[in-house]
Length: 603
Image (tube, rainbow, N blue to C red; front, side, top):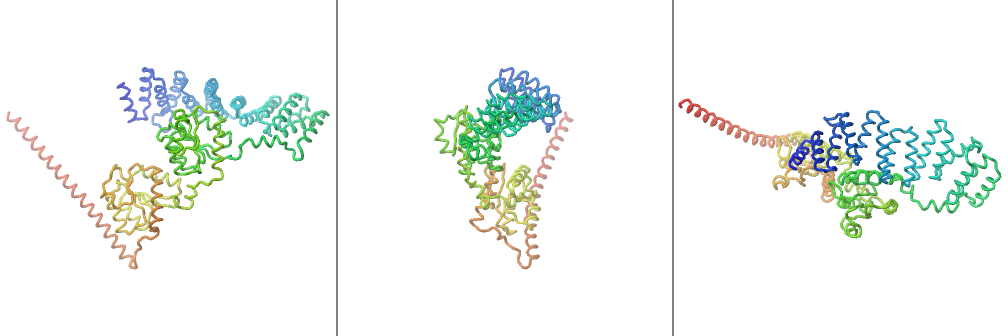
């Protein structure tokens, strides 16, 4: 156990060393902990495979992953990674073999949607593989997704056409039409093939039977089209009679009441393109839900932890969120609470959980966290889809209230200008990302002289001063900005690494924030800035230089120089004191050493 703790400590300090992860994997395997062992073996392989890693070695990565798949076939991530590496090496054939092995495992375990997602990768990797498209179509059909199944059969049919296999092309088009009667290309292809063969090559009785099934299931238009094709190709009187009877029954517009009722049963298309955010730390759940939602026409966003989910929500503003309850970094309930605080009723949130059972927690989470829908795992696909459409119906037509507020300029960061004063790369990176998303701008300076020089020409909306500011202490910088330069409209924020900054340190700032600063913190600073503008009306009322501009400018510069000079003199004084003490200490040590030497010689 001590050895494992020691290695874990080393991994935390050096997470990019694959040998440490391999050693941990072997130790966990000796203890019988296969889950932890496979996790660390996979981490080691990932480091060998990562293009950014200094340990990158693609041959070692492939060897490690093959051993991992052999010893831990339940670790599905290793299949994906190994297949991706083979694709990177342009070995598509090997990648497809690996993907098929994984799809077979999923199918054997009854995880049809996961098998579908794997075959989706196969068809993307090799779009000319007809067998891959047929298997993809079969799995979609078995998983209850007719749209994808039908279109995959048609893709295989077109590939078959290019090979001159008209009989196989016809069979695939027929399968596509049986799965999805709304597939017009399939119907047209069948008609063309019937016409080319004059009805001799294909089983007309099978088509008659299919047309009757279509008519019975409410697809009378398609049934009529099929019968008309048979009539045109064969000239048989019975097809003409059947077609006439169907036209008479359909009425003037050619659309039967059963067909209208059938269409109204589905919401498909009504909410097409609506954004849905899925937040779950289980890869398989994310892929499953992604497949379901894309089948229904939604635009899917994905996150693997609560904080990432919140960041994506703030950037993309989806109207629907589906989240697991037990999430790393930020709990699903807390994520829901933040989203509802940000978006209100304009966004609906569904929580999926296997821990917090509905009958016990539903009322509590609705009241405390604003959860709109609550499903226990495992759930039925139909129940999930019905719940999702209920949420979509609730938000459709409702404006995003927070976005509306942003557009009105009440909370928006758009157009704001940040000045960052201090040598803090982490803050600079966060502000840069924030401004990219929010449409604002920023400038960074590392020392007080650069800050003052910049402020003489441009007044920022928000001034972020860190405790890494060079040449001048942050309190002096805040005092200088307001009292000397006369800039009062800029919101001054002190970013400090101290948990509890002293009152004197932060007294000249409007707000004090503890580092590190994240996206949410910057949003809060913007809201505080906007609120101050609304209350005080200071925005745009900076202190102007008077008539004698040059004289005032010279006065300001002299004051600035005095402040900087005082700061420099103080630092120089203490530096001299420290140096003097070090010299005295060195002299004392030298004298002591000399006495010891003399004493030794005397002996």
